[in-house]
Image 1: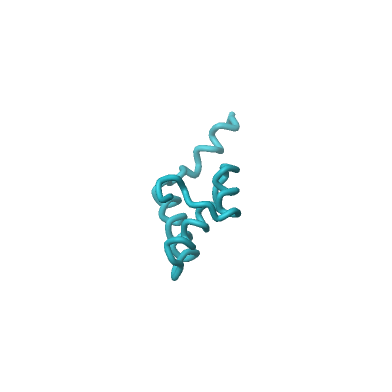
Image 2 (image 1 turned 90 degrees about the vertical axis):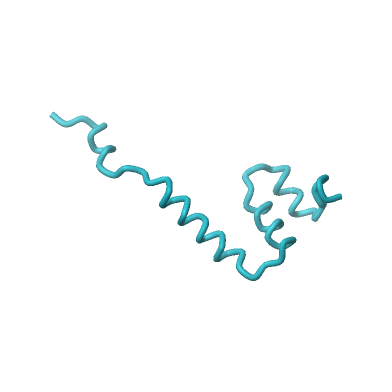
Length: 65
C-alpha cells in the first residue's frame, strides 16, 4: 500500500539549480542598468513594504546619506 508521502519523494528539490536560475534571471533583468537603477529595481522587488516604499519615493538609505 502506497502512502501520499511516497509521491513527494519522487522529485528532490535542487536548491543550487534554483539559485542559479534566479541569479541568471536577475542578471538578465538588470543588464545595462546603473547602480541607482539596480538598487531601485531590487527595492521594487522586495516583499518588505518599507523597502518598496523607499523605491517609490527615491529616498537614499542612511548609509549613503
